Amino acid sequence: MIPAGSLLAATGLRKAYGPTTALDGADFSIHPGEVVAVMGPSGSGKSTLLHCLAGIVPPDSGTVTYAGRELTAMNDTERSALRRSEFGFVFQFGQLVPELTCAENAALPLRLNGVPRGRARAAALEWMRKLEVEEVKDKRPGEVSGGQGQRVAVARALVTGPRLIFADEPTGALDSLNGERVMQLLTEAARSTNAAVVLVTHEARVAAYSDREIVVRDGHARDLERAV
Image (tube, rainbow, N blue to C red):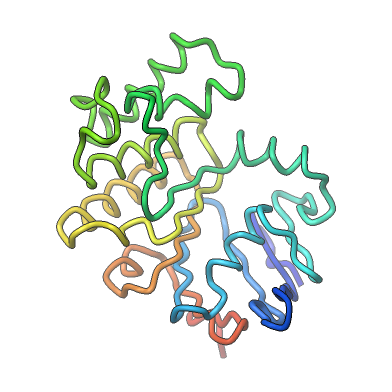
Protein backbone atom coordinates (compact mmCIF):
# COMPACT_ATOMS: atom_id res chain seq x y z
CA MET A 1 0.00 0.00 0.00
CA ILE A 2 1.28 3.49 -0.94
CA PRO A 3 1.52 5.74 2.16
CA ALA A 4 -0.91 8.67 2.03
CA GLY A 5 0.69 11.95 1.00
CA SER A 6 3.89 10.36 -0.32
CA LEU A 7 5.70 12.01 -3.21
CA LEU A 8 7.54 8.86 -4.24
CA ALA A 9 6.72 5.30 -3.25
CA ALA A 10 7.97 1.89 -4.30
CA THR A 11 6.48 -1.49 -3.50
CA GLY A 12 7.93 -4.94 -3.97
CA LEU A 13 10.94 -3.92 -6.03
CA ARG A 14 13.01 -6.79 -7.35
CA LYS A 15 16.11 -6.50 -9.50
CA ALA A 16 18.69 -9.10 -10.46
CA TYR A 17 21.84 -8.87 -12.53
CA GLY A 18 22.30 -12.36 -13.90
CA PRO A 19 22.43 -14.77 -10.95
CA THR A 20 22.96 -11.93 -8.45
CA THR A 21 19.88 -10.51 -6.73
CA ALA A 22 20.34 -6.81 -5.93
CA LEU A 23 16.81 -6.09 -4.66
CA ASP A 24 14.44 -8.69 -3.26
CA GLY A 25 11.08 -7.09 -2.53
CA ALA A 26 12.24 -3.64 -1.38
CA ASP A 27 9.68 -1.02 -0.29
CA PHE A 28 10.28 2.72 0.03
CA SER A 29 8.40 5.98 0.47
CA ILE A 30 9.23 9.66 0.90
CA HIS A 31 7.09 12.75 1.47
CA PRO A 32 7.57 16.30 0.13
CA GLY A 33 10.28 18.15 2.03
CA GLU A 34 11.56 15.00 3.73
CA VAL A 35 15.19 13.85 3.78
CA VAL A 36 15.50 10.06 3.91
CA ALA A 37 18.87 8.33 4.28
CA VAL A 38 19.23 4.95 2.57
CA MET A 39 21.93 3.05 4.44
CA GLY A 40 23.58 -0.31 4.17
CA PRO A 41 26.89 -2.06 3.61
CA SER A 42 28.58 -2.23 0.22
CA GLY A 43 26.67 -4.57 -2.08
CA SER A 44 23.46 -4.41 -0.05
CA GLY A 45 21.42 -2.96 -2.93
CA LYS A 46 21.13 0.66 -1.83
CA SER A 47 22.47 2.18 -5.07
CA THR A 48 20.30 -0.18 -7.13
CA LEU A 49 17.31 1.00 -5.09
CA LEU A 50 18.17 4.63 -5.87
CA HIS A 51 18.56 3.88 -9.59
CA CYS A 52 15.17 2.14 -9.67
CA LEU A 53 13.50 4.97 -7.75
CA ALA A 54 14.92 7.54 -10.20
CA GLY A 55 13.83 5.58 -13.26
CA ILE A 56 17.43 5.05 -14.39
CA VAL A 57 17.20 1.27 -14.11
CA PRO A 58 13.88 -0.57 -14.54
CA PRO A 59 13.08 -3.12 -11.82
CA ASP A 60 12.32 -6.68 -12.84
CA SER A 61 9.09 -6.46 -10.86
CA GLY A 62 7.34 -4.12 -8.47
CA THR A 63 6.14 -0.54 -8.96
CA VAL A 64 7.48 2.97 -8.44
CA THR A 65 4.92 5.76 -8.17
CA TYR A 66 5.87 9.43 -8.35
CA ALA A 67 3.30 12.19 -7.72
CA GLY A 68 0.49 9.78 -8.53
CA ARG A 69 2.09 8.56 -11.76
CA GLU A 70 3.52 5.10 -12.19
CA LEU A 71 7.15 5.65 -13.10
CA THR A 72 7.63 2.02 -14.03
CA ALA A 73 4.91 2.32 -16.70
CA MET A 74 6.50 5.34 -18.45
CA ASN A 75 8.61 5.02 -21.57
CA ASP A 76 12.27 6.11 -21.74
CA THR A 77 11.41 9.53 -23.18
CA GLU A 78 8.92 10.28 -20.40
CA ARG A 79 11.35 9.18 -17.68
CA SER A 80 14.17 11.23 -19.20
CA ALA A 81 11.96 14.34 -19.28
CA LEU A 82 11.08 13.78 -15.63
CA ARG A 83 14.75 13.49 -14.65
CA ARG A 84 15.56 16.73 -16.48
CA SER A 85 12.73 18.78 -14.97
CA GLU A 86 11.59 17.38 -11.61
CA PHE A 87 14.54 15.33 -10.35
CA GLY A 88 17.98 16.58 -9.30
CA PHE A 89 21.09 14.42 -8.93
CA VAL A 90 24.27 14.69 -6.85
CA PHE A 91 26.89 11.98 -7.33
CA GLN A 92 29.92 10.96 -5.28
CA PHE A 93 32.47 12.53 -7.63
CA GLY A 94 30.32 15.42 -8.87
CA GLN A 95 30.55 14.34 -12.51
CA LEU A 96 30.97 17.90 -13.73
CA VAL A 97 31.77 18.42 -17.43
CA PRO A 98 35.49 19.33 -17.47
CA GLU A 99 35.29 21.48 -20.62
CA LEU A 100 32.63 23.79 -19.13
CA THR A 101 33.09 26.46 -16.49
CA CYS A 102 31.51 25.88 -13.10
CA ALA A 103 28.71 28.35 -13.91
CA GLU A 104 28.05 26.55 -17.21
CA ASN A 105 27.95 23.22 -15.37
CA ALA A 106 25.44 24.56 -12.85
CA ALA A 107 23.29 25.98 -15.65
CA LEU A 108 23.46 22.84 -17.82
CA PRO A 109 20.10 21.26 -16.81
CA LEU A 110 18.29 24.50 -17.71
CA ARG A 111 20.12 24.76 -21.02
CA LEU A 112 19.14 21.17 -21.83
CA ASN A 113 15.53 22.16 -21.13
CA GLY A 114 15.77 25.03 -23.63
CA VAL A 115 16.12 27.92 -21.19
CA PRO A 116 17.97 30.89 -22.80
CA ARG A 117 21.64 31.20 -21.85
CA GLY A 118 21.28 34.47 -19.89
CA ARG A 119 18.39 33.25 -17.76
CA ALA A 120 20.06 29.91 -17.14
CA ARG A 121 23.32 31.56 -16.07
CA ALA A 122 21.50 33.97 -13.74
CA ALA A 123 19.69 31.10 -12.03
CA ALA A 124 22.92 29.11 -11.76
CA LEU A 125 24.80 32.03 -10.23
CA GLU A 126 22.04 32.57 -7.68
CA TRP A 127 22.37 28.98 -6.47
CA MET A 128 26.16 29.19 -6.53
CA ARG A 129 25.91 32.28 -4.33
CA LYS A 130 23.64 30.45 -1.86
CA LEU A 131 26.07 27.54 -1.81
CA GLU A 132 29.08 29.82 -1.28
CA VAL A 133 30.89 29.07 -4.56
CA GLU A 134 30.04 32.08 -6.73
CA GLU A 135 33.73 33.03 -6.77
CA VAL A 136 34.59 29.96 -8.92
CA LYS A 137 31.95 30.66 -11.56
CA ASP A 138 34.45 31.18 -14.39
CA LYS A 139 36.83 28.39 -13.39
CA ARG A 140 36.74 24.87 -14.79
CA PRO A 141 36.18 21.85 -12.51
CA GLY A 142 39.86 20.89 -12.61
CA GLU A 143 40.77 24.30 -11.15
CA VAL A 144 38.66 24.08 -7.98
CA SER A 145 38.81 22.02 -4.79
CA GLY A 146 36.75 18.88 -4.25
CA GLY A 147 34.47 20.66 -1.81
CA GLN A 148 33.88 23.55 -4.21
CA GLY A 149 33.21 21.16 -7.09
CA GLN A 150 30.66 19.23 -5.06
CA ARG A 151 28.84 22.44 -4.14
CA VAL A 152 28.70 23.30 -7.85
CA ALA A 153 27.18 19.85 -8.38
CA VAL A 154 24.58 20.62 -5.71
CA ALA A 155 23.80 23.93 -7.48
CA ARG A 156 23.33 21.98 -10.71
CA ALA A 157 20.93 19.61 -8.94
CA LEU A 158 18.85 22.47 -7.54
CA VAL A 159 18.81 24.87 -10.48
CA THR A 160 15.66 23.47 -12.11
CA GLY A 161 13.67 23.68 -8.88
CA PRO A 162 13.28 19.89 -8.56
CA ARG A 163 10.72 18.30 -6.29
CA LEU A 164 13.03 15.38 -5.57
CA ILE A 165 16.82 15.17 -5.23
CA PHE A 166 18.79 11.93 -5.41
CA ALA A 167 22.19 12.12 -3.68
CA ASP A 168 24.40 9.04 -4.07
CA GLU A 169 27.27 9.13 -1.53
CA PRO A 170 27.55 12.93 -2.01
CA THR A 171 30.38 13.29 0.52
CA GLY A 172 32.22 10.06 -0.28
CA ALA A 173 35.13 11.83 -2.01
CA LEU A 174 35.44 14.67 0.53
CA ASP A 175 37.22 15.13 3.83
CA SER A 176 35.04 15.35 6.94
CA LEU A 177 35.02 19.17 7.12
CA ASN A 178 34.01 19.66 3.48
CA GLY A 179 31.56 16.78 3.74
CA GLU A 180 29.80 18.36 6.70
CA ARG A 181 29.50 21.70 4.91
CA VAL A 182 28.17 20.13 1.71
CA MET A 183 25.53 18.21 3.67
CA GLN A 184 24.53 21.28 5.64
CA LEU A 185 24.13 23.37 2.49
CA LEU A 186 22.38 20.60 0.55
CA THR A 187 19.78 19.90 3.21
CA GLU A 188 19.19 23.59 3.99
CA ALA A 189 18.72 24.37 0.29
CA ALA A 190 16.38 21.43 -0.25
CA ARG A 191 14.24 22.31 2.75
CA SER A 192 14.04 25.94 1.63
CA THR A 193 12.29 24.75 -1.55
CA ASN A 194 10.37 21.85 0.08
CA ALA A 195 12.26 19.37 -2.11
CA ALA A 196 12.54 15.78 -0.88
CA VAL A 197 15.98 14.16 -0.72
CA VAL A 198 16.86 10.49 -1.14
CA LEU A 199 20.33 10.24 0.38
CA VAL A 200 22.38 7.09 -0.16
CA THR A 201 25.23 6.79 2.33
CA HIS A 202 27.10 4.34 4.53
CA GLU A 203 28.24 7.06 6.96
CA ALA A 204 26.31 7.71 10.17
CA ARG A 205 27.46 11.35 10.30
CA VAL A 206 25.92 11.95 6.87
CA ALA A 207 22.71 10.08 7.72
CA ALA A 208 22.38 12.35 10.78
CA TYR A 209 21.19 15.10 8.43
CA SER A 210 18.13 13.04 7.47
CA ASP A 211 14.67 12.92 9.00
CA ARG A 212 14.68 9.12 9.05
CA GLU A 213 16.74 6.18 7.89
CA ILE A 214 15.98 3.15 5.75
CA VAL A 215 18.44 0.27 5.99
CA VAL A 216 18.95 -1.96 2.95
CA ARG A 217 20.37 -5.39 3.64
CA ASP A 218 20.42 -8.33 1.25
CA GLY A 219 18.04 -6.48 -1.06
CA HIS A 220 15.42 -5.80 1.61
CA ALA A 221 14.58 -2.27 2.80
CA ARG A 222 13.68 -1.73 6.47
CA ASP A 223 12.38 1.63 7.68
CA LEU A 224 13.89 2.14 11.14
CA GLU A 225 11.28 4.67 12.28
CA ARG A 226 8.21 2.93 10.88
CA ALA A 227 9.13 -0.61 11.77
CA VAL A 228 7.05 -2.09 14.53
